Amino acid sequence: MSQFKEYKALELEIRKAGDRAQEIRQSGLSVTIKGRQDFVSQADVFVEEALKNIICSLFPQDGFLGEESGLVEKKTKENEVENNHGVWVIDPIDGTTNYLQGMDYWCVSVAYVVGNVIQLGFIYAPDRNEFFFAKRGEGAYLNGRRLIIQEPEEGQSIIGLGRSNRRPLQDYLGLLQILDQHDIEYRRFGAGALMLAHVSSGLVHGYFEAHLNSWDALAGLLLIEEAGGCVPNFLENNGLINGNPVWAASPKLWNKLKRAF
Image 1 (cartoon, rainbow, N blue to C red):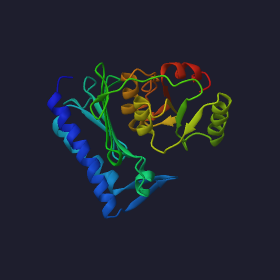
Image 2 (image 1 turned 60 degrees about the vertical axis):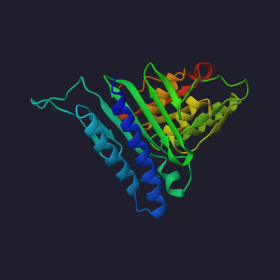
Image 3 (image 1 turned 30 degrees about the horizontal axis):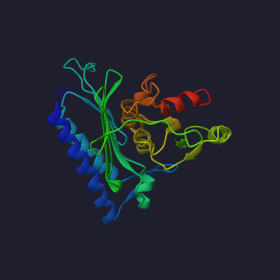
Image 4 (image 1 turned 90 degrees about the horizontal axis):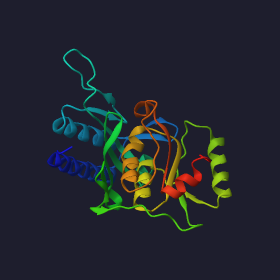
C-alpha cells in the first residue's frame, strides 16, 4: 500500500469527476428509471466510466465493481480469477434522487478491497466541498483533518437511517418504534454512503439500513472504523456482491442498540 502518487492521482480524478457531475446537472440531465425510486442519469454513467478508466490505468492488476457496470475481475492466462489482487468498488453518484433535485446531499464513493478487507475509502460530496479519505491503519480524514469519533451526550444521540426497498416496510416502521422507545432521534437524508461518512465526522452518531449494496457501504464503513467507531463485517457471506445489513456507530451507541437491530 505504498503507492502514494497513484492514490493522489485517483483523488484528483474523483474530485474532477464529481465537479463534472455538477456541471452536467447545471446543463440539463437525461434520466432513466431502473426501478422504484432508482434512477440513473448520464452523470452516473460519466463518473463511473471516468473513474473506471483512471483505475484501469493506475492499477491494471486490479478488478472493478461499479454500480452501473457490474463486476470485472482480472484473470490469469489460464482464465482463472486472480485472488491476490484487489477490487475497486464505485458508486458514481450515491443519492441520485437528491442530485437530480438539486439538493446538496449526494456523493461519489470509491473503496478498495483486498482479500475481503477494505483497505481504502474515498467519499467526495462536491456540493458540500467535503472530501473524506481513509486508509486502513492510518486514520480517517475530512478535507485533511483527522477524524476521531466522540460519544454523544446522554439523550442527544442522532441516528441516520436508510430505507431499503429490498426489505419489508414493516421492518422499517418497527425500527422507528425501537428508536422512539430508546428516546433516540433519527434523520433520513437519502444517501447511505454520505451518511456513513458523516458518522465518522460526528454529524450523526450512527447509521442503520436493513440492506446496503457494497458500493454504498464500503468506503463509509472504513471511515467509521478508522475514526474509532464500530462497524459490521460487511463482506461476510459474499457481501461484496450480495450486500448486507449495516449498523455502524460510536462504540457505546453501537453496543446499546446492536441487539435491537
